[in-house]
Image (cartoon, rainbow, N blue to C red; front, top):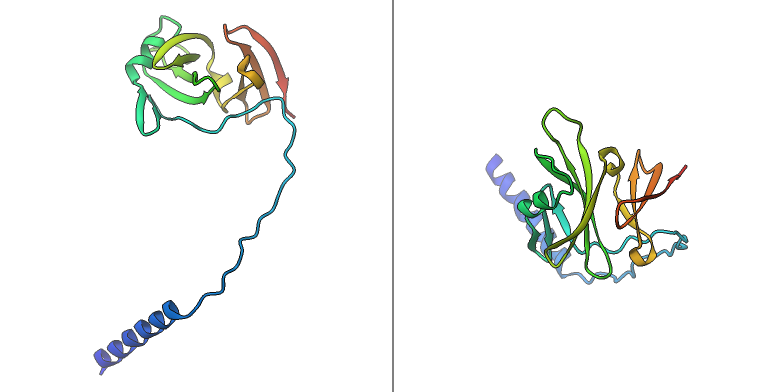
Length: 169
């Protein structure tokens, strides 16, 4: 008796699903809302590359290997490293935020600049300045690092000179 009840219940569900699939659906236009765009001093370009701890992948292929990132680190330190963030500039230059963990020493941060797979410059900085991402000034002249829950932005020129540190509170 139970098996007949189960068969009838399954048949009823199949019939209901078929009827739902055949009935015309009302087309409802999706609701859209527009938000005013805030005016900001930094522009963050759309993501054109991603990172996976030690690799940079762009358009589905590895464009920077762990060996390249390791060789590009602008300080003579050994030890494992991880990519914290990256940003792609308008000219295609990739700025990669890297933190290295040297044995028996404090972690050290770096910004590495890469263009078409070639290292074009970089500088070191305290690792804690790389905790919350990167940004670029319009035109890419200055790089901003965000730290402490986006409460502080520190600006650097392309040679690593600290230009300003601003509280975002």
